[in-house]
Amino acid sequence: MTLETPSIRTILPEGRRGETAPEARAGAGATTSAGAAAPAAHAPGAVEPRLVTRDFNLWYGTHQALKQVSLEVPDHSVTAIIGPSGCGKSTLLRSFNRMNDLIPGVRVRGSVRVSGLEVYAPSTDVVELRRRIGMVFQRPNPFPKSIFDNVAFGLRLLGLGNRTELEARVEDSLRHAALWDEVRDRLGKSALALSGGQQQRLCIARALAVEPEVLLMDEPASALDPTATARIEELVLDLKERYTIVMVTHNMQQAARVSDRTAFMLVGELIELGETRQLFTRPRQKLTEDYITGRFG
Amino acid sequence: MGTPWPARPPGRARRWAFADGAYRGLLTAFALFVFVIAALIVYESARGSGLSVRTFGWSFLTSTEWDPVAGRFGALPYLYGTLVSSGLAMLLSVPLGLGAAVFLAELAPRRVGDAVAFVVELLASIPSIVYGIWGLFVLAPFLRTALEPWLIRHLGFLPLFEGFPFGIGMLNAGIVLAVMVLPTIVSLSREILLSTPRTLREAALALGSTRSEAIGVVLDAARPGILGAVILGLGRALGETMAVTMVIGNASRISASLLAPGATMASVIANEFTEATGDLYLSALIEIALVLFVLTLLVNAVARLLVHWAAGGRRDVAGTA
Image: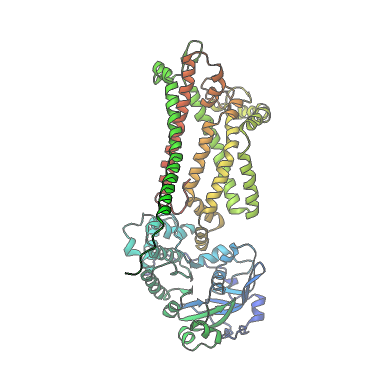
């Protein structure tokens, strides 16, 4: 169901679109160190993929967590990032909406672009950026408010005060998160009374309410039981019709089930990025094969 | 099926059964001791105030007359003084303390926050007589020569600020109390803010909150705990004796003006207990102690209800104090 209300998505200044950082220009066309498929150079005028990183490096103090990561995520697809603990997959995910900024001592080099916007440009409005990128966390983290107020939170931040419109959007978001039928008659109840799986779907609804372009999911099902996990996975498959989804997961079966493309990372490097079927059946890299066959990790 | 558990040597089992029982009994006795003390306090003050209660009945709480010579005692001015001085203290310390706690927990770098919190906790360990001396020799002259004349000149048309700049009085007591309860409010609120899950901040920021909007979410989640911190501060203000006795002026009358001297329940007991001649006088003072005890009990009960209500079934989010 589509909304009749005008889009509240904030459009960034046109001038920022298509701008390229110097580092990114220098690195364009280079392959990743481990030989992953190089991002194709885009002809002028061609639509750039929704998310692009070029030679992106990130340090926590002196520890380098990401090394020369270059990848692309096309629109309306699900990309899974797999890899052993500490390989930098969450760090990479949190680089797209600059959640890493919260950690003191973080430094970056290279380029991350979302919808053509240079994420780490000094002029980037981080609040606007995060508004355009929804995020779902490892553990469900609803606010200690009512179900309704949770979903309405982002809308109210945008200044939407009209009750009827709020109600319409909250219902819409809850429907998209496949939660509406379970909570329709208790919207005023505390969100913390919901089960873990319902809470996670509520968090998804909360993120969807502000109409993001991208949905980042950081192991969204790792704290849930198998039934709730299955529901989240179904939901992800539905949501890719409308959103671009990047999902970090520990679970390779989950990556295989829901993603179109899979990226394999190891100690801060992107080892391989490819079609999920290809990556799991005919990996190009020896390291990928070792990981998916359980030789380490 | 299978081999049975090896039996413990009978002597050992018996020894342990005895030790467990003794240990349990000892701890139970310790726990009961707390109740015994509370019960004794109630019993003693009820017994001691019996004469006064029989003589004055409920009028003890509504009469403003305090005349030891004529043997007529009414505690209303002290009840009023306690409530007003503590109320004033909370009015000053809650916004200040909460602001400081938010800064220390959310905005200051961790190391600065820890350092300031250490100093704040140090403030809590200063003996109250030192606060009293400060109120008397530093705050009072300032109030007398600067703040109170200014208040009278500009806000003197309000009953709250009419009269003469004495320096000591309800205003001085309120300020001293505010300073004294500030450490409690700041350090507890800071701890509570720090203990709210980091994921709440992240959720708010990821939805496009500004920093202050995210802090609003955290404050909202921490509300029950912060309320508890404030109530703890209020409890301290209600019972504070020494410092208040030194700066409040000790006049047993009710005055609308904050500049006028007054007295609190605790201060009148401290002032007059040693010179109480006659059984009725003594009994009246003990009854004031009983009333103060009941008042703090009521405040604590209301506080528990408030915290429970503010928590609204979300104890898992913020710790209740």
